[in-house]
Length: 270
Image (cartoon, rainbow, N blue to C red; front, side):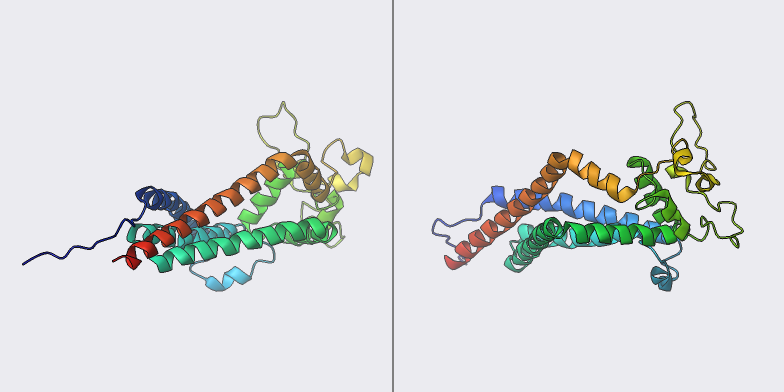
């Protein structure tokens, strides 16, 4: 019996494009899987997976959502790109490029809106921080996120240390039995370079003092202002990161579309 051969008439799929896209996406896919695993592990540690209704119980923002959402998107995109490139599947490659293009468009739109509506963004950031101040003790991941932000940007509260009056443990009301009454978290405290061990009680009763007196012990500037200042000081680096991410996305879309064109050209010449 004679074997049947497929004649391509010069058209062929570029191996460089195919395996470069495959390698590009397998890294993306593995990173997504790692993010998802970290997020699910964090939820398992907090007992969320055994009681899914607790997802909606937290009054503030659960940082684990970042790992779940970002990891999920990366996993799906990476999987579609990997299998699409390896199997030369035009449906998966188109899904990959369209999905990536949609994300790029949303990022571009968000960037333009953030620039145009700067005051609205600042108000939303203020609302977000104050809302999470109220839920500070409700979730350990949220607590760690707030502590990291206040230590990194040398700030306390959204606009001032008095924002901590919104938290039931730190407010100055007479009926508050907490030892942390009229205080702030330790992350608001000005660090003493001579101290090797963090004093977690350094913020106790500090808001009973005057504004001038507080400056000796805690940061008095708000995190909204400090974050805005940090953005201005690091504008080139931040812009460079976003441009780099955008170029990677455009590069991925171009590779996928190029591979789709090659596959279609080969199929047309069978």
